[in-house]
Length: 323
Image (tube, rainbow, N blue to C red):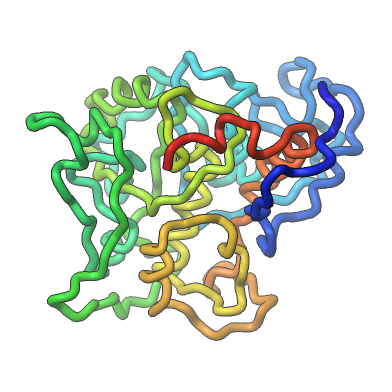
């Protein structure tokens, strides 16, 4: 590995500033590799096959509770050691499970389950909560006539807008962890071409699809042909539970963790009427969002810091992809 970069050619905003991510410097103190207690394979921080931390870290890592269940469908050709999906399973083991395609559940009879996947009929998270918003749909997203957005997406989904000709009717319903409009979300962990094949499977094809707000990815690993708004799996999970929480319980006005995440202005527009005054240290699970799920990015932020210790941000091709 090359020597650490001493100077940046252009200034950059540190994306995780003010987020409630636990101190991950303990990871830098772990020397060598360790044996997984289940499969006896050599691992660094966690076993990406068994989805558990190494014994030396078991009591040191943050653990999260999520507002709903997360299923991740991983394509069998995805390299386990390079996927960020396992981060969620290690940090929130009671709420995350990973399946390797084609060995997946049959979701056809499941209610209140959604698939995070862009399609022509995708809903937004605010629409799950019956907010009066819609996607801007212009010129079929730049696709040739006859092509379906869900199978040939080449441009980002435009921002959500509040309908101007009708007053927004945010639901007055009081939400708890037990009565959210969705109880399980399914994510596909694969390349775009692989995900289209999984989406065609009849066991998931009938699920309602949900599209996330645009957010620039901070993932350092380049995927050819993918723009900056293609999120790593762990980023997408964080974005989804963030949007669910804000729409259910609001956003703490004192929370500044979103300042440098580069989320589209549409998110902030929709969050504005849901922003609440609350104590700056209030992180109760049904309190306005104040970083309750930021530790999903615990391993991700640590690796981001390590990469940027040795490489100039502006030299990494992943951050020079088109927006």
